[in-house]
Length: 188
Image (tube, rainbow, N blue to C red; front, side, top):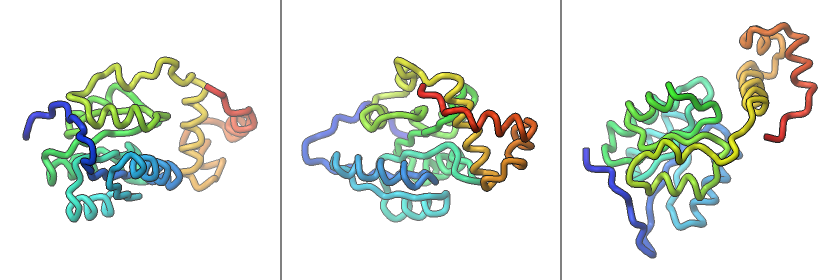
């Protein structure tokens, strides 16, 4: 594998970027943002589509969500890096942890970034010389209440909106989950 030194973007140079995320709105907004920045963007909602697009278009960069519905984004990263050893893959997640960050780097990710993140920060890590563990830490990190709410909503969505099933998966009583859902979502 070649060295992952910093990439200096030359004027007029067009990079190919693969975005792999099952959240249609997020994927489309990132696609629009990076297209406006001069990237040729390919997007995939799942593992199979991502591998097919990568094999066909051979992108220099990939943004891969850690959780892709029932699939695991790290498996996507592993396969993409095996097929394209020079690919700079960045793992995006709303549920960051040290363990998953380490595993992401182990399977070949160039960087690991927690959501919410802005396109400038993503582009900075795509072009960065190497992973800076402090780059993914925002100045004002989201609160624990916001993380809890995001996780509850994730489990609820994975349960098809079924509150009883989500409560079972979360290890909560159904009424406790309903009380948490009635609260306004935290701002930060």
